[in-house]
Structures are given as structure tokens and as C-alpha cells.
Image 1 (cartoon, rainbow, N blue to C red):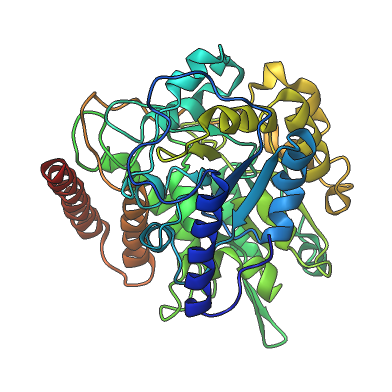
Image 2: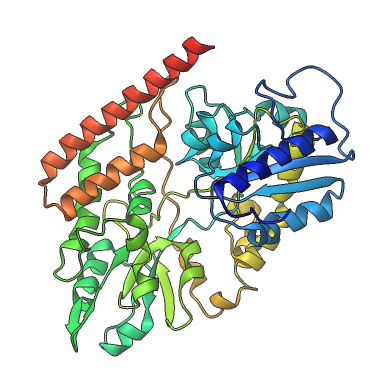
Length: 460
């Protein structure tokens, strides 16, 4: 399929044409609001010609999608016509549905699952397909399955975990450490040690400001090493304020080093997460491993294991994956599940680990070779300390919440904690006030989701 044409009007014409094409061909993906494929009947012929519409919540274009997934699908399933809808400004999932375009298979994460999958009514529990296919869920890293079940009150399994690049490491600019004669960071350092290193590397030299530290703040807080969740496991309120205080103060102190804080007028998490790459004046960055792809060739860099807390030695961040989803409206769930099963097979995950440096979503004990070969065919990772990814054990997933708790939109909760961090580090609001205001914000978000669910139930 060609790239989307420019212009909102043209895009909508394209969507209308896609619906008409699907309707005329009798293929999947188009326009039925009622749940599809739920009626009893014979299993689907997996060799029959079928068109499936794929939609990602990430920024992949057609070329990137084909390289990662599309080409593999076409080779393994020649009877499947793959239509991919890239992310387009102003054309989100709600706009697609309004225009009559219903994706069959979607890619997204748990942070944005409410707005991307659940609220539009596309969430589908894959448990029936898993049981019918006698599919082994125990292959996967268990925390990834648990994270998905924790997205909804019934613990339904809306998606299966993909290989990921979200484990966090400490990147560092070797050139800056060489310039100032400071030893490089090493695996096994604590946050206190890295803090002292950041103070050494934050300086003004020849009129140029050099920052000692930057981070992807939202991810560091979300996937924190203390395994504290946004929400209390037993109530719709902020969880363990003392631990959140510890996390906010630990990361916040780096931004209180003179010359290392952000511009209060530029509060973007994205800008701060890219400062290491863009400005090339930052010595260290805690970020997700997959961000190595954005580091310019001019930077001589390497990485070390993420620093640890004294109270959680040898503990890295929680692992966070993207997921494959089959939508409720998908009329071809059997072939869709077969495709996802193939893409998550040991063979494909091992190949992706070697060629694309994605971390398998499988248990490490079951995929040792894949973990050992990670990044071997990736030029940018040659000579890099890839073992830093696995130097620590992953942090445990937060405790499962009590059954029936509705919760709140995960992405809005993430923003609430990012706002708390900005108040503390950019607005100089005292910590007690920050925590009180964050507790109030979390309560409101929980009420908002409850009210939304009640409204939806009343409208059915």
C-alpha cells in the first residue's frame, strides 16, 4: 500500500476508498460496528485470500513496518494482503472509526491502551483463541502478561507481548569524559555514585555549558526500580506516597545541579529525552535501550547498566513491552492469531534480536541464544557494552490490583506524575504540596474513568 497522501481531505477520501475496496472484496477490516467473528461456526480457512488492516500507535512509516513485520507476513502468509495505516497527524483511531475504517490488528503499549484500544470499543480478550490453539503463554516473561491483564478490571488478555527495546540503561558520551579527564561510568554503580559523577561533568568550559545528566523522565518514573505503581493495589488512589517521594527526589536532585536543569519554558519530556542526541553537550543519559538508534555518528558513546537504589541492589527497571492486539471487529481472528503467533515465535524473535537488537519477550531461560546474540548484526552496536542490558535482574511488576477496580487511564496517570516532577524541579514547589496535588489529580482521574464506564454501560 502506498504512503498516505497529504491533506486531511485526501486522507478521508483514501479511508472511504479503503472501506469500499474491503466491502467489494469481501475482505476484513471494514466498517462493522458489531463484534465480528463471535458467532459459532467452522474455523476459518487459513489459506483463503484475505486482506487485513494493521494500525500502529507508534511512528513507523510503511518502510519501517515492512522491514519489521510486513515482509515476514507476506513471505509466510502469501494469501494475506497487508494494509498498514501509519500514524498521521489529526487522523487517530477515533477518526478512522468515524470514517468507517476498522483495523484488524493493532500495535500499542499499556500506557495508551485506554485511548487507543479500550475506549474506542476495539478491545478483545484473546483467551479463547489461545485456548483453542493450545498456545503456551508460559513462554513469555510473566511480568509482561501480568501487565496486560492489569489494564482492565476483569484481567482479560487483550494483547500478546512483542520484543522490545524499553529496558533502560545509562548512555554516556565518551568524548566528553575524555575531554575532562573523568573515568567512564561502569556497570554496578548506584544512583548516588552517578549523581556525584553528574556534578563533576556539569560545568562551563570556553563559554559552553556541559550538562552532566539527562533522562527520559516519564519512563524512568513509570518503569521504576522500586516497583511502585501509580495506583494503590487495593484502592483507586495514588500508591505509596513515601516511595513516590523517594523516586521524585532521587531523579529530581540531578536537575537541581547548577547548569543541569531544564529551561522552565521548555517542559517537554521528549525534548529532555533527546537532549543527549540533539545537543551533544550532555555527558550521561538514562533512557530506553532502543534510543541508541537516534544517537548521531559524531558521538563516541557507550552504555552502562542503569544505576541502582541502595534499597534495591542489583535491580534494574521494570520491563515494558508493546503488544499485538486483535480487534473486536476483526472478522478474521484465526488467521490474525496465526500471524501474531508466527511473529512471536522463538525463531523470529531470535532473528529479530540478532538483526534488530530487540529484546525477546520470552523468558530468558527459554531464549538464551537469542539474548546472547542480541545486536550481533547491528553496526551501531559493534563494540558496545550490550551486556549492560542484563547486568541487573528486572524489577518486579507491581502487585496485582484487587478484582473489579476500574483504575484510571494509564497515560493520564503517567502525565500526572510527570507534572509532579515538573512542579518539583521547574516550579520549586515543595514536595509535600506536590504529593498532595498529585493525590488529588489521581483521585480525579479514577473518578473520570468510573464515570466514563457508567456512561458507556448506560448507553448499551
